Length: 190
Ligand SMILES: Cc1cc2nc3c(=O)[nH]c(=O)nc-3n(C[C@H](O)[C@H](O)[C@H](O)COP(=O)(O)O)c2cc1C
Image 1 (cartoon, rainbow, N blue to C red):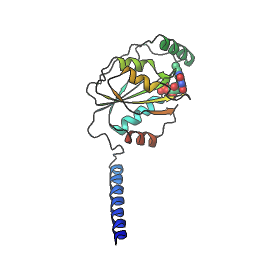
Image 2: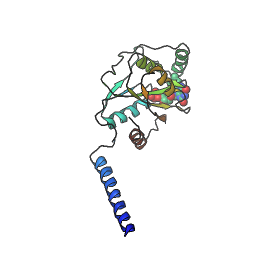
Image 3: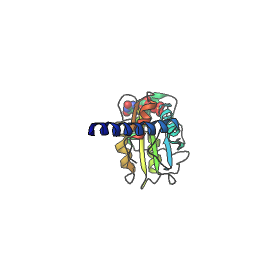
């Protein structure tokens, strides 16, 4: 008798889980853990890889999108940019931006960057340094060319010590997967 009861309860639980999962997906609510939080997706992208991830996150979260754009555009010559970025890193240069953005109206700020010399790109440093992230949640993401995130996320936390920096999403060049991005966000504890 007890066994039958357990089976019935098990079936009810399974049906409930199935119903809620199906309901969320069929209603287009792929992201289930953000409630009424105000979300900003800020990113810098030199060659488009990080921008693709940013747009996917924006689409999933219904957040606002903000592109970080340096006042002085980087050269189209890749090797020149690599050399300049190395100098900028060594001298801790923070290149001026067209617009510093404003994170004050947001609870959660996704920040995306390509990895440049083992850390975030310098325009992203400017963006973080020129905004007040006290009490905010930063969700970092980055794309790289084979070396992984390196110290990107640790350096973001150092630049915004009063923010809570959550687990980042890291992908190689343009290989980010939609389902990976969705489950990464759903597993975040806001
Ligand atoms: C200036 C510069 C420095 C880079 N440094 C690294 C690095 O340290 N590690 C790495 O894995 N990839 C590095 N890359 C490769 C980029 O992180 C990678 O191509 C990234 O996906 C580019 O993103 P984007 O298209 O959004 O600009 C570097 C690229 C550039 C232009």
